[in-house]
Length: 357
Image 1 (cartoon, one colour):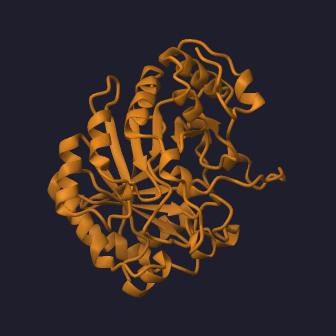
Image 2 (image 1 turned 180 degrees about the vertical axis):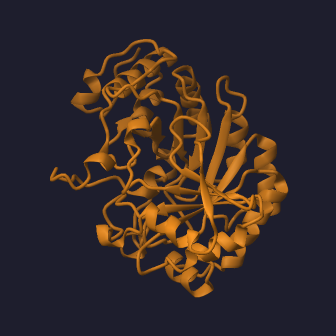
Image 3 (image 1 turned 90 degrees about the vertical axis):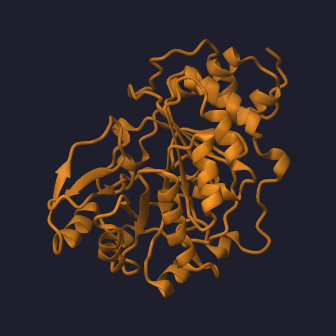
């Protein structure tokens, strides 16, 4: 093992190094099972809750190409994570389809032993038929599309760019045609902004293979103007839908699933609701996040990461890298959503565009 690790913090240097194991758990006995990989911090949208133009407009400095993890570096890192128990990957951004030849990365990840599911979250605007088919052929399992409004004017207001809603709707159809199923559509619900779109989204995809998911507005990052009175709770979302369409709860599909599942009583499909604010699920969180520049974050609301890029580029062995990750996870005690509002001092958080949702 070489020692030229660069700018690692004293905390990072103190973490133990050892071989990985299939039962890696943190201080709260939560296993490491999911890895979310941001491949770029860039996006062609400027959504108000993620990349508002006031902070990400002209002059904003994005990560330079040489600082991004290469596809080969990502694949090597994923192999180490898979040996530590990771089974599921989610490719995110920014907007992951901005990363050139992203399907080549998928083709490097899909054969890795232990990885059973690779999915992607995208805004759908760049999901052409050719791109959707290439992603499917490379080994992508399924896709989630972010869509916060079906009203054209509201969609433009929320995304704050001159990209038509029809491009996103076409992207959803292209994903379905390519077999990237189930396709899920995520709506972040913000009070006094897009509650009127909840039933529209439900009606639009009722009876189709698409699963709408409604997400409580979260205080990710520092610049989205979040406040508790802007949160439409999961209970309120269900009540809005139940006013027109009866629902019944479904059991989780797997341990640690973030969305509560609800079935249409008439059998015409299902929806999901993600209640990070009103009903935190920190106790079952098994997700780690890898930023585009190789920082490992153990929580969506993290204040700092751990520099895996330095370890990879210092030509350390896979065993040493596994030991470093093991030490980080063993020390993990994040449960921000459970302690939110309890009077603890809130530190500046990493922006969502750097580590994905």
